[in-house]
Image 1 (cartoon, rainbow, N blue to C red):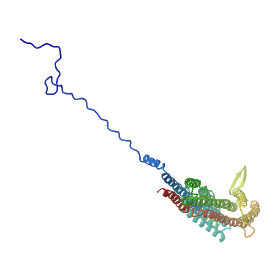
Image 2 (image 1 turned 45 degrees about the vertical axis):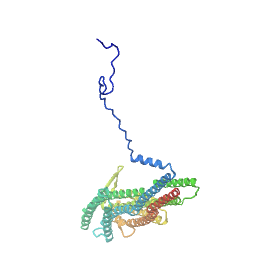
Image 3 (image 1 turned 90 degrees about the vertical axis):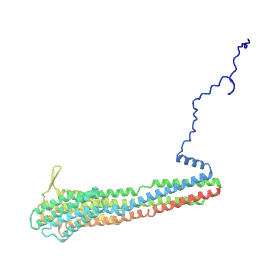
Length: 479
């Protein structure tokens, strides 16, 4: 029997599919392979893209020229806009000084003067006895009408809810109350009742302690408004001046840069822009200097003198009222100063005359021409005579000679009333003169700014157009 040979060789490996041998083990599926998605580029903002475009454009000469042209136009237009704004604001403030705040301040002073003069006229009429003269009565009525009209004007120009409005309302309430007291005093005086003097003193107290302080408050408020308008009109327009110098410097640099690259001395567009800018800057500087000088003159030669003269006139009115009331009261009102008794009205008279003398001295120092000096000097002479005549009348009154004292105060000739009327008349002349001085100087100051806001805006637009045209002319050479 035949057997196959024994061998230690391994059996044949599996061959290809379909061949004899051990079958192949199929491949097992592995884990899936993940492919990373491409990362999109970060989004850029419009500002970044714009900056890159500008940066790219700036690398070429045409791009740099466009940037220079845009900057020049912007600076020139900004200069014109700021000039128009600041010049317009100062011109409006100067116009307010001339046509609003100063007339209102003067009107408030007239209210104060009219009230004080009405009080003086009422006391003068009372001293005349039961049949007061027509002149004192007419003067009283005219003063009351003037004060009422002034209050109407002040109310029309007061800001709603302001302190001035409250003061005007208070004066409008007190005025008829005062008139009622005066009419009662007259009625009792005509009938020969001494109580008429009490009503007159009560009316004077209402005037001195309530009405005149309120009128003084209104006057002070209007003066503050006037000072504020001066403060807005006088400052230099530094922002506009600085922008103008910057615009001129930028235009000069652009022309120098163009000359270095082209050897052309002048660029017509840039020269026109520089001329327009220089003209606006010169107009602004000269115009504001003239306006400031005019406004300073109107304040120094007008407002300061007017304030002093108004105060002096009011002091003379109060002195005259106290002089009259000293005879009405006949020693019924006294005051103790440093342990010594004085007649209250004589004591106030002396204080008012001291204020009057000081005011006239200041007004004489402030007056800058004969038209202002002459009436003040005349008022000083009248005041000196007044004081002499008053001393004589006071001596008669203190000696018990009432009728002689009365004749020296309200008599037809040689009385203190003549001196008071002369002082008041000369002060009125001085006030009219200083009012004219103020009006002329303030008008000159305001007119110096006329047309500057509109002119600056127009010239700035023309200057910007010239700058753009000049740069455009250079750009055309690259096309």
